[in-house]
Image (tube, rainbow, N blue to C red; front, top):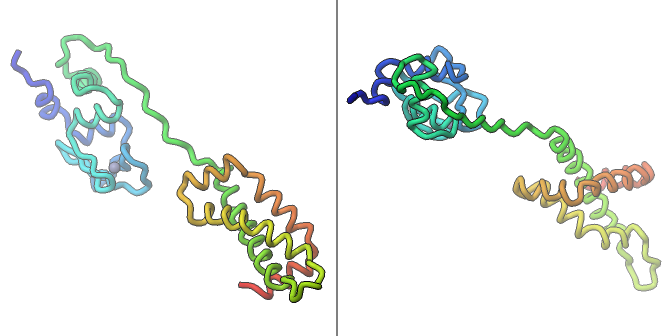
Length: 208
Ligand SMILES: [Zn+2]
């Protein structure tokens, strides 16, 4: 009657067996990939009676691990361990609802590709606009104003803003470009494709 279920679990189950049972791949050095933060190289060290993650600082024992992994209370976690390892510590109350783990967000490859392509295209366009702005700047008031100069005036602001978001913005900023105006780089790419090879070449040789 005075049995402490938490201590019993520690006494009877090796923590390394426990984390393996719940899906961790523990290597010979006792390290596994941490289930509590995203990582590729194992920094989650599992000892006989406690664990410690050198990546995110998570630390605890058997019950802490199961509690955290499944998002359940410590009593529920203790009962679950008792059930799963047949320890008989839970007075037969085995029906423990376990919340499913949230799946890790999958990498959005479409977005990654878009981001890469978009950045290149806008950099190219911005170089071109800067070049036009220098070269076609009317020297005197009676000069006819070149339409490329006008385009540079009209488009540089947004192109600069957009590029700043892609290069120096937070993940949210980049996402916002994707969510609100993901076609812009495509429009620009079409614009660049239409320009004759000569003007592109001139641009490239004059800028860095
Ligand atoms: Zn961790």
